[in-house]
Length: 468
Image (tube, rainbow, N blue to C red; front, side, top):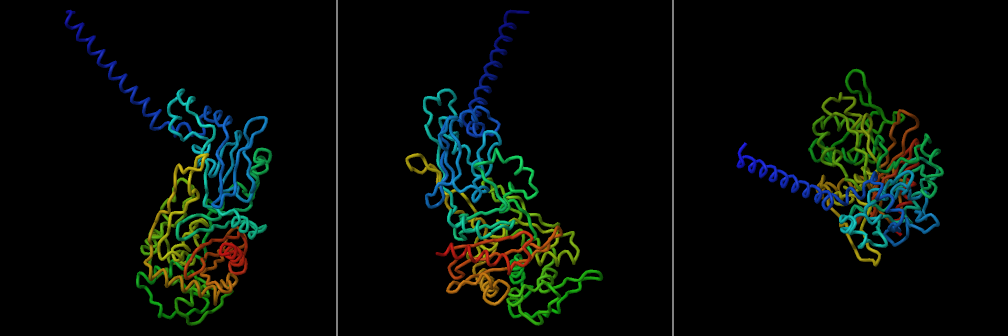
């Protein structure tokens, strides 16, 4: 082999080594700088876990400055303390060295643990720049309203979601049964094995048939698609025969007689809304659910369980009519139904629900601010006002009269959702004041029976507190 060939081979190898070195530097730089915060905050990163033990984790506040979670110094290092215990266990979650993290403690762990800081991507150099305290969170939650809602649900299993329809801010998120995050490790065996599922955040992860609280959406869809007008009359005989082998019935076979759309919503007439679903047809019903965002994800912060929608194209007529009254294979979360109420409260616009309003440093300076974001506009303003007026009639004259508040116009809709596993679930959605809405609420009481008799009075207590 000639000397020139040897030199060329050496040169090629050198070039290859240089290229590989450049690729390695770029890759390491990408991991260290671009993906550094992700890997630092990852729950499987044991170095970050050990690091978190030695620092004072950030404090979580409610919208009014009340402490919801704080780290306190003990002989073994810092320990997390939750002043509201089981009242706020689900939205805030818990932080445990043994069991990990859930809720906001998990979603915003990078900020609370001081991991999501620029200097953390600098490896050993970061030790010279480390902060003594991590970042704090300010939530949209109103702890007083949360406490009232928690108490109002009593010993029932269920959930409550309270939103500001103008911004999407979550003012309360209650789920029962709950657990005490202060004792999560000592009580874990009992909590994790309980048939009551206290670890489940029913507000965002519980799936239920909506029952009649879906009817305002069907009223809007029928009007928008010009299937009906507000002047059309329906005749309710107490039942509606569909095909050869299915009959849709009213509760207790009550015949409502002749009524228009507003009256049908006021008395929650099943045969009217079953027939509206049939007149809309499978494609338009599917389009309505899509228009309201039931197929759209709410994002990482809430980690909501996706709605279970039927395959509309495969539904028989009886099943389609069932969807029109919120039954059949349709399953939704309480969060989604609070958002449905918000559509009609906020002139047809639904805002993105959010729990964290800002991230702050120890000195109070704002690190990150979360502004309200318009999520969807499924309905025009005129139609939203029309449905809102119908929902006012539900409270003033119909099934939602136990949500009535003297001097305040309340709009709402009750629901009694049949449940194959036991007693029906009781629902109420609504908002107030109906003319200038400040609060939208969804209440579900598992196996509660009548929505008007059980869920509506609970919603009334919450609205009274919120409007003080």
